[in-house]
Image 1 (cartoon, helix red, strand yellow):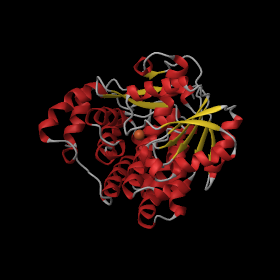
Image 2 (cartoon, protein in one colour; image 1 turned 30 degrees about the vertical axis):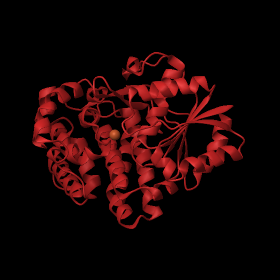
Image 3 (tube, protein in one colour; image 1 turned 90 degrees about the vertical axis):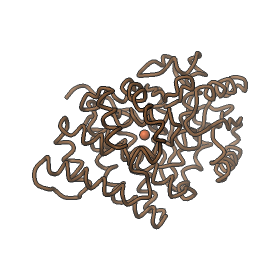
Length: 382
Ligand SMILES: [Fe+2]
């Protein structure tokens, strides 16, 4: 086996773990925290709850509410000015991928200067970042665990993947109680994102035994628990989705992703779509494209999805993909691109695929994919 590394934050997991946020900040030496979140989390009451927790621990904070879905370069740069102007020294974010990625972007600019686009790609952040505590409010993005940060470059209308070990936060807090205030749509979008992370990481060219076991566990947990979590909203099932998301995140943070996420970033950046809507459309099409390059691994995925072995390696792999298509079909989600994109905008698929081919995620796809091949996949799922 080649030399491999596995980086994860300290993870505080469980019902009520949000209560430890203040102590975490103090442990990291906080004198003044920059608190990052968005209006949705505020409305659900979680920002006030976190402020109360910080107050009880005697931690001072300043609040940056400038988070939008698909965070943009200028929002991150404004946040870094806010961090510096207020003399903050620790960053806490509470929210989904957007809030946590905004916090990471702020951390990069606050300590390394320049513009966020200077850091696009892998390992381009040189100086250490301010300490970070990331509190996820979804079970999917994995930004609280990962060394990834996705920010939209407004001028180029593309989502940049910024990947570097220093983006792994010091502490991740995963409190499944927060999931109880989430809509059914958001629970599904987050879970299918985690599923895509697990599957792409498992077949990645840099997967290791440490990531592979996390991937398979995450796939199993999501397939078995998402339908019941949506149906019953029971905390037991929601907690299983949180566990799955942490496992999938440990996998993809260290094994990276593949062509499906490269496409999801480029489509999402161009059309300002929510990230989670793309996977039920694109994931199985990319799996079929990749099949010949990772047949045994897709058979292993098939066995987990089906919970049994079916015939040959190829049969197990194909049966798993078919079952996954059936699984997506049981939710009220779009299954073709035409449901999300106007016919008159179809011509944008070509530049989108030319962009996707340069996304850092495409580097670890098990089967090399040119922009023409990506375009072929997009046309298949049109
Ligand atoms: Fe994702």
